[in-house]
Every structure is written in structure tokens, then in C-alpha cells.
Image (cartoon, rainbow, N blue to C red; front, side):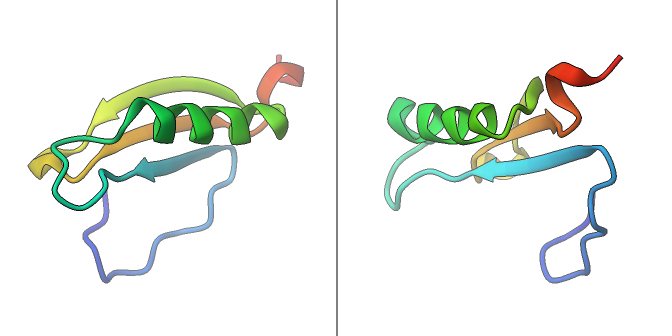
Length: 71
């Protein structure tokens, strides 16, 4: 993983998306997670992993951008 403030390489196949909590919240809301998952699904991406981000800054969604058409 790269640290905040450093250049993040362009994704080739897998894309990592951070869903952050609203200010004052401990984690992202179910609505925020659902919105992010719906957006990925509309692009035909396949969700391959969900990870709690270190330091409680949110949840990472790992998407396969080749999605449902990948072999």
C-alpha cells in the first residue's frame, strides 16, 4: 500500500476504493457502502475483497475491473 500524499499508480485490472466514515462516525454507514457497491456494479465490476483500513479510516473495496466478463 502507498501512504497518503504519494503517487498512486493507475490500476491495470484491480481497483481499490476507500469508503470513509462520515465525520464523527467510527466506520462508513451501510448506505455509503451500498452506494459504492452499486456504483461498481453499474460498471460491471466484480467485488473481490473488503478490508478494514488500518487506523480506522474506512473500508477498502477491491474491485476486479474486468468484472463478470473476465475468465
